[in-house]
Image (cartoon, rainbow, N blue to C red):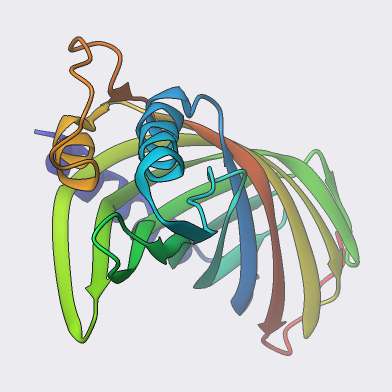
Length: 245
C-alpha cells in the first residue's frame, strides 16, 4: 500500500518542477552521520558476544564495539523555487566492527559485524528566510531504506558470510536546513530526526552471531526501532540562472 503513496508524492514533485517560474537546479553530494535513538537490542547481542569471548578465548586482540554513530554518503538533486525546495537523493550508511583473537581450540578467528542501510529519499523544504545567498527553514522527507545486519566470519583461510537480518523500511524524516551560497554553488547543513513506521526483530542476528551460546531473550527485548537523529552536510553545484527575491 505504501508504494502507492510514494508514486503520488513523486508525481506531485514532478508537476511542481514544471511550474512556469524561475528556479535553481542543483546536483549535490555529501556526508551524513546518524545516531540510533535506542540501540539496546544491538548492545545486548554485542555484550553477550564479548562476555563469551572474554571468558573462553585463549586471547583477545579486539572485541566488538557498539555503534555510537553510523557514517554515510549521499548523492542527489534539488530544485529551488523561491521559498520552496524539492529534491531527492540516494544514500548509503555503514558501520562495521570486528572481534579478533585465539579461541579455546587455539584457532585464530575474526568476526565482523556490519550494520548498514541504503535507500532513496524525496524531500521538501519551506524556507522561512529566502534570499539569493542565504536560505533556512524546516522540511520533511520520505525514505525507503534497506537495512542489513551481516556477519562475516574468518577462521584460518575460510570465510563465511551470513545475513541474519535484511529488511526494507519506510520512514519519515523531519529536517531543518541552512543553505549558504548562490545559484552556482552552495553548502547545505541539515539537522534531522528520522521516524520509521516499522521495527526490526534481531532474534536471528542474536542466534547467528552468538551461535551455540545465544541468550534466550523475550520477543520485545530484541525488537529494534531504527529511529535516528543526525547531521547532513552537502556541497551543491547549480545552474547559472539567478533571480532576485
